[in-house]
Length: 237
Ligand SMILES: [Cu+2]
Image 1 (cartoon, rainbow, N blue to C red):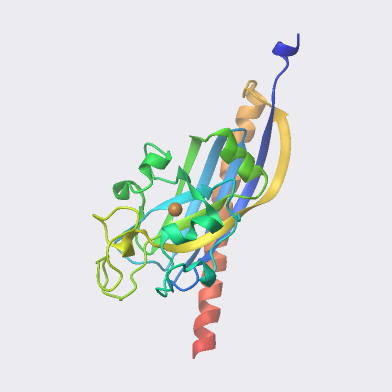
Image 2: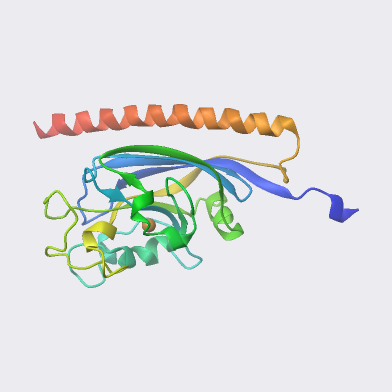
């Protein structure tokens, strides 16, 4: 009898407000909205202001022993004046989900630079991304961190080795291509429990509705970012 009872799956929504990683000075901001249904995610990732015409790897990071937050200047372990992805790991943990535009979303695709957003004004969504239980739990607990990578430190208009050198993640890539640019903790905005299994047409139609809401939220956030940018330029003038 017990075996036939439906498992309870956590459902909910979380939102990460993406802000520049300390020291790295990437101009930009963004947001990630993540809808959770057990171990299935739907996400919308949007960001503005990063290096144009260049790919920006993006992930959900987490680890049991991480601080579950974005790195601070004190995480610059070697005192180089910038934060590498590796130096941020004590804060946000390793890659758990690759927020690719298509195909595989596992950590294996962490540097699949041909399947991430490209440029300085990016927004894309994906549905039905399967994650492991540990990642689902981290999201439900508000402990997962969204990171967008790629910093053009020297303003050359492209990722190059320059003063930064090769990437700590993949020596065949410039460090500029992989260093963390934007970061935000995915904070839970809504949480509930529904029977798992995804049976019933009612649940299916609710999923569609939620996706429509997510799309609307993305537009609102883009508007919010524009307002912030205008404020910033007003302060500078
Ligand atoms: Cu990452």
